[in-house]
Length: 332
Image (cartoon, rainbow, N blue to C red):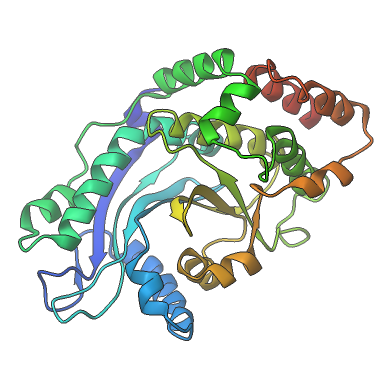
């Protein structure tokens, strides 16, 4: 699978507020997706402005990369949100992204962070430049084009990821994440993921079991390892998502001082937007697995789970083995 097969018929778009323009701007392309995301952000901003000191929260926020996709859908939206202001200092985010057709949604879910890493980094820089510069024309021209050629192929992404899994241990991942004594261990995070997502295997219908809260997972500060850690978490989650029909939102960035990836399971909700800026909303809506000591008392007594729990006590355990054990769980 080549990169063009991984992301077919892309359409780039941008919209929002930037300092060099007096009002809302938007690209010529992507009208339907702009309307969709604009509605989400407008509802989220309406909720956010009810928060005391919301302007300070907004102004100190960092860019957020996102992927909106469905586990059974053939279209996805990949982009970046940057807190923006127009020439009159009126606040509204600037969003730049691409809507595209998806050949295999679950390949996109697990390998997308690696495949899109270079393009994501380039787009984020151009979006920040568009928001902050006195002349945004060049950045906007770049953001309106689709042929930048920064995406890895599916095969190359899979090979890089396999090497990461085969060469990274629990101790290595703990070091990458900089987990301290008061934070969760890798063992607790993995067990918590199983505890939260296992019900999806038994109740795959959205109408029966859409998880009502988001899940946050820690990410490393090191940009070279970040996409691989994202792919690792998503590969574990995908074991329980394969049989579902869910609308996923993946958001990655520095959230309230910590670098995290947040996943929601019921589409884009205004509360999720507010949680990106308001720490109280984040505590209400997001289950942060950086604090997952509770998983010790909620893990299943199933033999496979107990085996995984025992494995995870060993710092020398390879991530490859964790993935294999999770996949065995998914076949039960």
